[in-house]
Amino acid sequence: MSEEVKSLNFIEHIIEEDLTKGYKKDELRFRFPPEPNGYLHIGHASSICLNFGLGLRYNAPVNLRFDDTNPAKEEKEYVDAIKRDVEWLGFQWDTECYASDYFQQLYDWAIQLIKEGKAYVDSQTSEQIASQKGTPTEPGKESPYRNRSVEENMTLFEGMKNGDFKEGEHVLRAKINMASSNMLMRDPVMYRILHKPHHRTNTDWCIYPMYDWTHGESDYIEQVSHSLCTLEFLPHRELYDWFLDQLVSTNKLRPKQREFARRNLSHTVVSKRKLLQLVESGVVSGWDDPRMPTISGLRRRGYTPESIRNFADTIGIAKRENVVDVSLLEFHVRDHLNKIAPRVMAVLDPLKVVITNYEEGAEEWLDAENNPEDEAAGSRKVPFSREIYIEQEDFREEANRKFFRLKLGGEVRLKNGYIIKAESCTKDEDGNVVEVQCTYDPKSKSGSGTEESLRKVKGTLHWVSIPHAITAEVRLYDRLFSEANPDGNKEKDFMEFVNPDSLQKVTGYLEPSLQDVKVGDVFQFQRLGYFNVDKDSSTQNLVFNRTVGLRDTWAKLEDKN
RNA sequence: UGGCCUAUGGUGUAAUUGGUAACACAGCUGAUUUUGGUUCAGUCGUUCAAGGUUCGAGUCCUUGUAGGCCAACCA
Image 1 (cartoon, chains in turn blue, brown):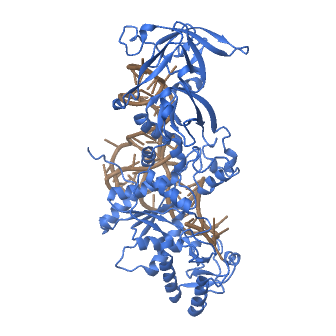
Image 2 (image 1 turned 90 degrees about the vertical axis):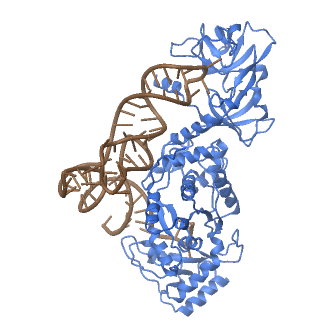
Image 3 (image 1 turned 30 degrees about the vertical axis):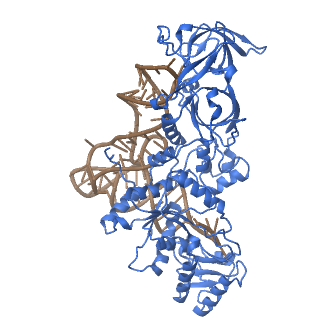
């Protein structure tokens, strides 16, 4: 296998340059640092693939670190879900880390800053502090508490830690520069009081470090060489570096933060807050609703880890604003499923066909190939009888030459079966066709090798024998949002673009081989799309999700007319 | 009216670091096909604008334009 020459993204360029400038390869270390306050989505998948991909590329360890500094929002449930998702995507972390493991070290370092006169306790309200912050165009004002003595700061900070104060009474701030053009450098808060139990440290602490005071220091503790985050953290870099400047020792590796653009996907939203809103408003059934762009939603929908990784690989990483078309994701899942999904026959919108010259009560079991892309997949038997279902849209009383399907007087092959000819049809009082009467050519059986079986007819239809069919609930999904970029509109809230028809449930008639499927099994319902077995499924009540439809050039042709 | 970031086909990303603008998806033709799927062949279309440096600019410089980020005791 020859190594394909693959171009590097800008992060890889940075690393390559660092390697030439003295970094040693075994010093490289990365991390994926989610906050456990929600489920991972496709945007995170991109970040996961970036960090773990780098780990694979450079044979470097990658930590999974939970940024758990805000007990008000974080829960163990999310920790577990995140671990499950990363593993499912196929990655292995080196060490499972928690920012909360560093609370004591962070506290000790904070004491050090206080002693060096680089941090102080501010006793104003958050409103007062905010009002002194200034604006991007005006400098801020210094707090009246900015020049407290080290002793007073020490006493107060210890009091904060010991629970002597109520929430909001004091905060610890870094003493930097209230006139900085970077708002984050205007004496940022390092600690706040929160009398809330933490999912790991319980009530050990009632002061919690802020993101900026935690993240770079955690990277430093773990000796992460390249700390990659999204572009909105770019202004934080100056502060990240300032904090590191205060405590980095020269014999240890100094982490560097670099930023990349988050990936947006068309026809959906990728923001935990907005996804939470969809869950809480009941628009979707939960974080793993198959319409959700969460990793758990995609998994339930039938996406494979390979397809998501290939997608992330293809879209790459860069610094500009982007909205990736969801059709690219769909391409990758089709691409993978085409190779692995067994083919079966299912009818979702049935029309009864009676084969008038086929003996009543007779049945035969026909050979059917499981996957033309994979000979090793073998074959199975499907039952055939006098009465079958085909799709409503596969029959028209009359149609032009472009219509390759069944029409009166026309012939069509039943997949894996016989060539049939439509002779007549019956309609209900509204004029809808309710049954088609056909004749079949007994010598045209698929694979029989007869001259008739080799005849070419233009159309091939999938079908299912009515007496043998089993039923299932089939859930058909459409895009969750009607707008390509639902959160790109300044006047309208993204919730206004929710597609009310994103879920349609129908009863499907399936070939009986589907009786014993397991949750998660994937299939191609021939000519319809890829489907998997939903977790709501039981032996009595099968439930399938449509992962994605097949490419449909016929539908496009129809749309044009 | 501050600071910072970004700008390459419809979409996403490349371009040996100043040397022929390409890859994937989408679109369109056609061939193959017992899935209007797959596969194969072909096709369409790109450097935000204006100046400048240079033998040569997507790449460097200047100015402009457009978009984004920054004023949580969130991350």
